Length: 297
Ligand SMILES: [Mn+2]
Image (cartoon, rainbow, N blue to C red; front, side, top):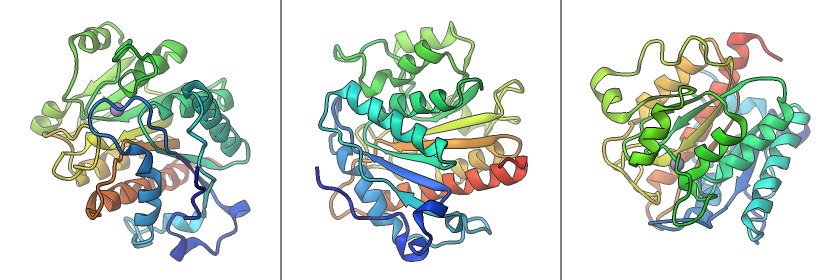
């Protein structure tokens, strides 16, 4: 695999030494279980390329001033579980060196690896998961594969039983619908309710953990905003809804890491790649804001 030499918004923040950087971006170009449109293995590189067009100020602050290191891409040519183990190790190492991991997929399966690294580091803490997604990803198997992107939250749920809050779901199987309804640790605000009622206030249950990991499947966005993904779906989130979710999230909770997955770039069509880069930068804003609001070092 070719090693990416790209940074994240390098033209603005490339002068900050890696050892001083708060963020560690981990490219994870995994593409093994794609069921419809392919191309997500090109996602991380497209996001890094698009990041060079970002403006540094976001909501009145400059999150990139905290420093953004980009790790070499995870070797995704190995067997799937080995790739997930590598991602978990990279996430653990990031946290262990006081950095905030930012995983770029690749298919949604990468979140299983990423969360394993989160739980290895925060072994005594409850870490809630916010999942922005068009799909619940709670299938036991999909096309015979338990490590399919469509099963990732089921695997995480079975292994660690964390609190999960899903936002923007609008494609769900009967199996997933029943599973979700019989597992009260999984809460949700699906896309139709989000559209009709606006974001719930408060948007998370009161007893949701104070430390949160975000997994952002770009197909949670409306297909008009995000056509460059395996399963673009109508009726999804628009940008300022995402921004509001992040603002509400860090008002009294801390974002300890996040991933952004399932971008499948279309050649000659830059806007979704740039949207994904903005989403990553917005996530970094949320990390900084959460640390400040909650005075966590
Ligand atoms: Mn997903």
